[in-house]
Amino acid sequence: MQTVLRGKDFISLQDWSKEEVDTLLDVSFDLKRKFAMGIDTPYLQNKTAMLMFFEESTRTRNSMEAGLAQLGGHANFLDTSTMQVNHGEVAKDTGVILGSFGHAIACRNCFWGEGNGNEYLRSLAEHAPVPIMNLQCNLYHPMQGLADLMTIQEKKEETKELNVSIIWAYATSHKKPISVPVTQALLFPRYSMNVTVAHPEGFELPDWVLKQAEENAKKHGGSFKVTNNMEEAYQNADIVIPKNWGSWVNHPDGGEELLEANKDWKCSEEMMELAKDDVSYMHALPADRGNEVEDSVIDGPHSIVYDEAENRLHTAKAVMTVTMGGKG
Image 1 (cartoon, rainbow, N blue to C red):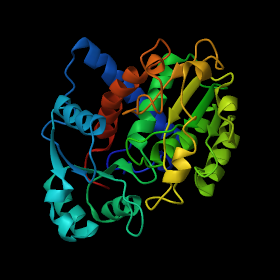
Image 2: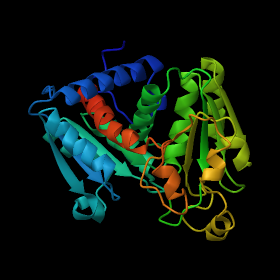
Image 3: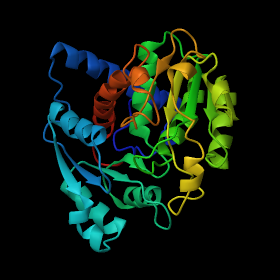
């Protein structure tokens, strides 16, 4: 177990060693047990975190706010449309000042283009005197990835050689960033899973993601492959994660025609029958019901989406518990 993590930024799980991720998981399980037993966990008494949101949120915001309260601290929710960042204040100035007010800064910024979300978070991290936590950017969603991994470990006896399929699905609710599938594709091979990424042509993940995922699989004894065949991804799967993501090449300027051409990429009862009998269905939520997935699947016996969502609380608490404090 790695215990010296106070002050460490949480921007991408790629920046954390497997031993460090294991520590986060161990703390997550401990906090979940204590939560179930009603045992108080005032590990961050009188600590304050600033939560900057450039986009809407349900699970992420509430897991952070409730989680920090349960740890004895306080979260300041900041709608960036009401902040001076909306008038052009740079990340350096925001990071230095907010960092001097509390003990952590957490930020959701999925903006693409020049000065994109990940670059903004890295700039905050460069200048802020406190740890920076990524609540989702254009490239990564480490909070979601950690909760997904925790859920898989809970539901399956062994991650080694587990067949996990990350599958693109049709949706119309809003343009969804690639951060969730990117995080999963990079993380799961580190736990010796056999990972398949499936999508129609035009929704490829970046080449550097595929390269890193292959390297992670080779190092940790898993496997990684990409296919344009939806049925292939469902066949013999232990876990399926059908979720929409936008075309990172076309984002944010187009892709509607390409999207509409792939309405048949839906998680249905027919597709689920191709997987193993005890297959689990996962989704980061919110799901675009009727488009990404049939109600009978997401509400059915194979769905573990609510356990997955609950684990957002316990993993968020773990990240805050081990990181909050000034940087060394």
